[in-house]
Each structure stands twice: as C-alpha cells, then as structure tokens.
Length: 130
Image (cartoon, rainbow, N blue to C red; front, side, top):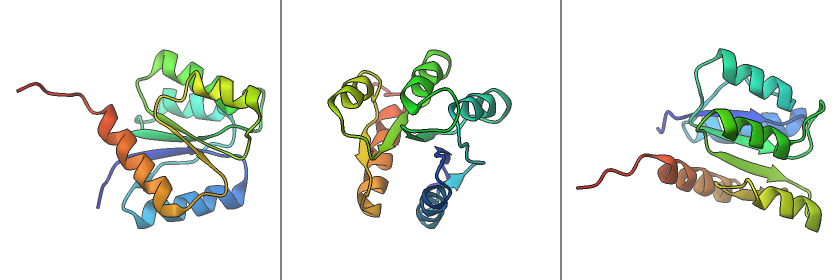
C-alpha cells in the first residue's frame, strides 16, 4: 500500500512486535528493528535509510531515545516520531526540543499512530513550488 521503510527503535520485544504488525498490515516496510540507540545509529550507517523512525525514549544501552534522535538528526535527514510512556516535565521538555515529527504516548490507538506517521512522511517530503 504505502511501501515506505520504517525503522523501529524499541527495547521491549512485545511492543516492537506489535508495532511491526501494525505497520506491515498498513503496507509499510519494517526494516530490522533496533533495541538500543547504538544499534539504531549503527544500522543507519550500514543499511539503506528508512523514510521514518519510530523511537522509544527508554532504551537499552547508554543512549536514551532523545539522545539517539539528536545524534541521528545531526547526521541524517530522517523524521523521528517518539513513542513513549514517559510524561514527566523534564522528559517532555527534552523531547520537545527534538520532536520535529511528533510524539505519541503509550498506550496508543493504532489509527492515531498511523495518522501521525502519514502526516510526518508528508511533511518530510521536499516541497516543490509551481
């Protein structure tokens, strides 16, 4: 249906599988997921670039999702949507500093996630003037 490639960065296996199922059912191509920020950055250095990244905040490894997103945005032009259960003011403030493509809170409704992805993909495409 859509064909865009999505990288999921999530350290909880059941959530990663659920996200993969939602995305594949909607026609997205889910590339090999990463469970840590370090794995995500390494994957981006080696593999074809995804069209969008779904990034959890709490990750395994030394980088959280916000730090990982900052590093990715410094090197690659890929939209990132945060998926998180965190809602503390500190985390929200850090997230909003880098959340250019959106944030969705766990638990989320599948259609809301797909709508947010669709909007982020449209907004990330180069705008052609007539």
